[in-house]
Amino acid sequence: MDKNIAVLEDDCEHLMNVVVDTRKAFGKKCVDYDSKRVQIENKILKLQLKSISLCKIKSKKQVPKLPLNEMMKDIDNFKEEILLKEQRLKDVCYRSTNLKNVVVQLKSDNFGRRLKVPLTAEDLLREAKIKNQ
Image (cartoon, rainbow, N blue to C red; front, top):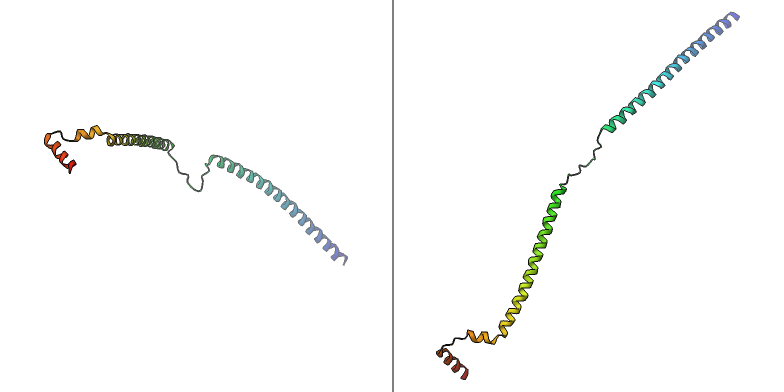
């Protein structure tokens, strides 16, 4: 039994040494893996930063390019048209007031009415007959 116990102890010690050795090897691999993972992550981040800085950010919806110079010219032309039409309207108002004044003067002008009446003797006789009747 002592022999069996000694053999079992040797086997146990041997297995424990194997476990310790595999843990050491696995630990080294884990450390190597972790350091390599960190290095690769850093490289990826650097690449992403470089690639992001080189890329232009595009919006989801396209912003239309507006021709501002043409729009300003159109607005200026529209202003000029409005000013011209306003001036024409003022001119029409001024002319209409002048026309009203002329019409009033013509209505009140007795001398002008007399000039319109024919001056022949026959016409004067006809008018006199009409007035007497």
